[in-house]
Amino acid sequence: MDNCRYYHGTKADLAIGQHLEPGFKSNFGAGRTASFVYLTATLDAAIWGAELATGDGASRIYIVEPTGAIENDPNLTDKKFPGNPTKSYRTKHPLRIVGEITEWTGHRADQLQAMKARVAELAALGIEAIED
Image 1 (spheres, rainbow, N blue to C red):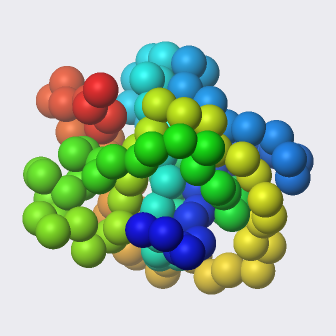
Image 2 (image 1 turned 180 degrees about the horizontal axis):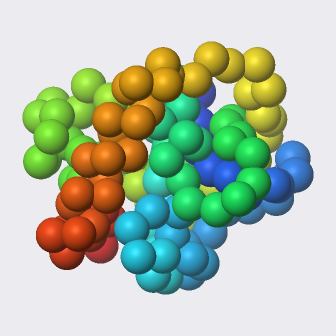
């Protein structure tokens, strides 16, 4: 995982040099306090994160650097995509924002609507999107 570019998709308006840290409201699920910060090495996964994040702000994708150890994200790797093809990770350490991707193409409207419907269906069943 060394020499890899990592991304974080969100609706939070942040600045270069700021840190994303655990202990704040999660971008997903019921909005409980997050024990981890999530990152990915694929732009597509970051786009999903930005598009599905809660909040009223614009979808944003930041380039981030981990400041400590990262681990596979069990929300995706163990349950949905064995082997971690989405290159999704999490950490209890801050992520330093080092850049922002300002030009990216989101998913097709039908794909996004289908994913939002699935997330809503899971929420109605009481299934939390984030596993700590």
